[in-house]
Image 1: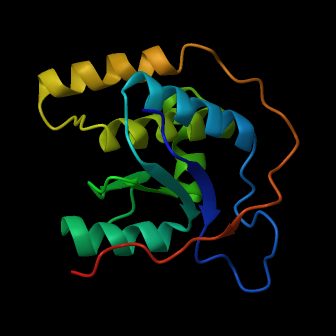
Image 2: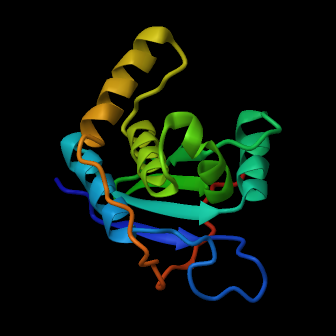
Length: 166
């Protein structure tokens, strides 16, 4: 079964920002790589990919993982028949860390999308063996580099509040 839908959203955008407040480049490429992971790993159900601020990810990280710090990507599995889960991406953190991974912003976004999708597929990286498998999967799905483009996505919509209450 194919993924029912993968959608891109934004959340907690600066006041007054209407179109693509996080300047997400190459949305079609991000959707394509997410679909490739979902199909390759036979992920069932929809996925929402949410671009947001460092503050939002830090808040979620503190609430759900008890870690009071920003990270690049958080994945939340839903285990529902029609909805696999959500991926929250801190775009500023992703852009800051890109040089550390020898990436530009566009390719680092691809990497964190793949990373988040693999978490929704049940992969983790807490132990050395798990980390080796997950990195090999990341490399596999990222093997086709994306050429940076200037065109930005303009049709992102505010994210729905889907996170389950604690």
